[in-house]
Image: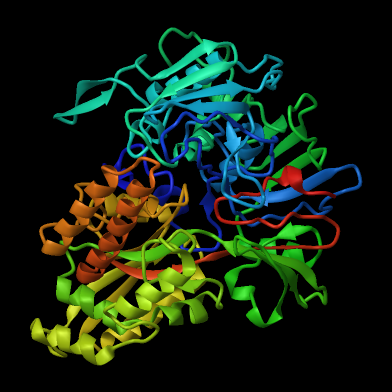
Amino acid sequence: MPNRAADSAGSRREFLTATGTVATALVAGCTGGQDDDGETDTTEAGETETGETEASETETEGTDEGGDASGTLSLSIPEASNFDPVQIKGDGSQVVSNHLFDRLFTLPDDGLDPQGNLVDSYEVSDDGLTYTLELKQGVTFHDGSELTAGDVVYSWERLAASENSQEGGSILDEPFVVAHETTTETVDGEDQEVYEPGTLGVEAVDDYTLEVTLEQPFFDALFWFAYGSLSPIPEGIVGDVEEYDGEMEYTTFAAERPVGTGSYEIDNVNTGSSVRLTAFDEYHGDEPGPDAIDMQVVENSDTLYQRAINRNVDLFTLPNSRFDPNKVTIEEEGSLGQKAGTYGELSNGETVNYSTWDDAYIAYFILNCQRVDRPVRRAMAYAINQQNFVEQAFKGVGEPAYHYTPPSVYPGGQEAYDAHAEENYPYGYNEARVDEARSVMEEAGYDDSNPASVTLTVYNDRNPDAYSQIAELLRTKFASVHIELSVESAPFGTIIDQAINGSLDMFSLGNGLEYPAPADVLQYAYPSSGNFSQWEGTEAAQRALDAWNRIQDNLGPSEEAQQARNEAYVEMEEAAWEDVPVLLNYHPRGQRYWYDDVDVPVKPSGFHTLKYDDVSL
């Protein structure tokens, strides 16, 4: 499987959510659709839900008036400029898109099984390759046209073939691969297999019946049907695929007048400054809470904080530097690990509502194995105690990481995660082993007069305070084990560019899961030509690759396939421990705060996202 982190289209998770913060973009996914015995399963897709979409957990706050009596909710978002579903979007653009475009499936508040949103029911063929989806009738686009299966076919063809698409891998790359043909093109002097337009295995059987054929069975296929880039738009509205001239210019659609079936529609866009949404009167689902949402572009965290303290906002997050864990009181806990209670007092004397949830995310430091020797990487792992990262840099919000896989999706869950790490992690569970680190280095020929020199590059635009603290912790620890660490900072985008070029020794990155299975994060934990760590050529690397191939050979929904995957997941984790292509950091938790002026549903998990149409003023 290709490592999408290095693809020109980018990785939907590593490129957008590799922040190492509690503010991550997360996808609402779904599972199920076929019994383990392989028999065709016709399933009612459930009641329409509007509360779960793919969204970036951003700092949110209002204008000076906040939510008002007329039903307008005011928020702050990062920069927002392109809302096309097939574009990889920054946080602000994604927040807008979440309200404009609906997905085929969503998640219920109390679990991770799919419920229908634009789909009434579905069938899966005995071989697990064909999904027949019955679309909900009477769903209206913002332009007044009715949603049909032809709109979905067109939208997915754009996703696969449009020159404007950056998300084609979501339906053309493993593990979820819609059947298609390829052709050979020469790019930069090299032949590459690319999608052949018009060959996608998606068919409109009739106006409301959609048939999707996959290249291979996939146990979590419905999570992809819930992915935001697969959201339908009206057939032919833009002409960036064959046989369509388009009804409007692409830039108009993408940045000014995007058209979807979502609970809100565009009222006004002032690019770089503000976006106003109004509730869509013909929305097929539950009526949204706010009549309108005003989104102001605000980037400065200090400004966001001060407006929250001044009660100019009702709903917000706190910068990590302002958070005091001693002010948290937890009153309720949910079945998915979500917690709710209060936080306070704030500096304005107020006590506010508070919630936190498992983000299903791993933050780590990637080590370029071609630039940093294996003994140095192993010494680094011995020298650190991940618990210090959580306590000192992230104020105890999160858990120390000993696996790529977050505890909530590790085979057997949190208990199995902890037991495997405590019994097997070779570098010290919840402790630093400085003597072992020093011995590894000295055996490799390093000493005080001949230290290893490594440069660490961390974000200066994503939780910079926390990462500067971690960098200082690492520098101090490494100095005592013959590693001279230099620290540089750069914007996230610059780090990605340099990582692609292979010019960094060590850098901050991370991955939020798209569906609740270790395979989604372990796709970055095996040797491949596009892997940022450039890990290859060792026995451990080969074991990781062999285990990954076994996972790909067992992607079906049966219990036997699941067991084979679980065993291979653990083998991949242990192989990575041996060679240390990444220095594991922590698993974050999300947080949100709000005043009593609004009623905000608690976010259940990192696979659920909270659209603001669920907020009651």
